[in-house]
Length: 74
Image 1 (cartoon, rainbow, N blue to C red):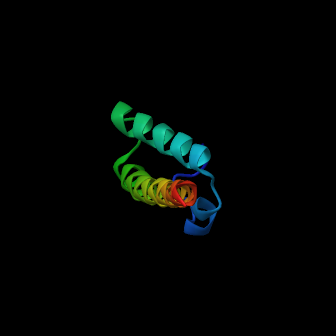
Image 2 (image 1 turned 45 degrees about the vertical axis):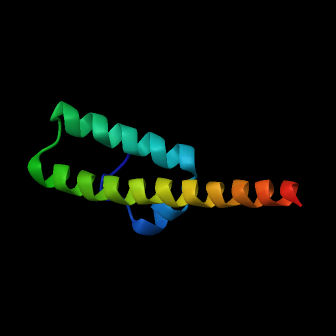
């Protein structure tokens, strides 16, 4: 997984599947209680960034599908 203190620019380069996999890894570690407090906080912060990345990618995909649907109605 790498360092939980992921740089925002690194997260912005991830595709949906990569971001979702990293988010799932972080959630598993947080749920297992494997991380000390400071690392847990950093993991949570990274998780929020990954979640936002996934949401942005899903929004983009939804917009693309909507455009395709609109094109077919013409």
